[in-house]
Image 1: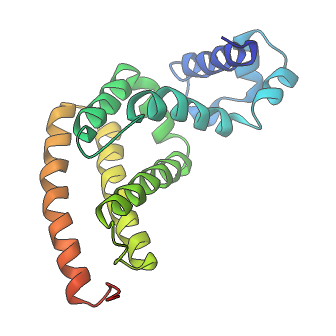
Image 2 (image 1 turned 120 degrees about the vertical axis):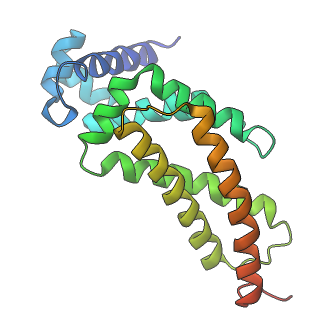
Length: 192
């Protein structure tokens, strides 16, 4: 493993450890650096600020680790893996969702929106759905799914991941049919 990645992981572990002691909004770069045993310049060499570190943790330890190679065939299992990973580090995820104002929620919605754009592109092979509708549909699903995940996390992650994903599967199946019916009926499809 490259030295830079080892340092990043050590910095990330320090932040995660600190989130067990105090809320994210009360943690400073100085706190993280001291916990890690590095100077602040080393921190800033790897991350612009603590929010960049937070994004890196979400990206590498959650999204890339659980959603890599997600497809229509395996998305339910991958999503369960994502929720299980959040549950395994429950205090960190609850703390960062609760104490970053809406920063992490916006990040999650942005990432989910990208996944839904890819899904819509795969479903709409003939490119009949206009770009503005594609963006609207992806935002709709991103806000819905992220809202459920955020509510689940803030509520203490009480429900089993399988329950959450099962309900999302049912809802997304119905929404997919309804969305494409709406798109056809409202004339949002380009009739090329």
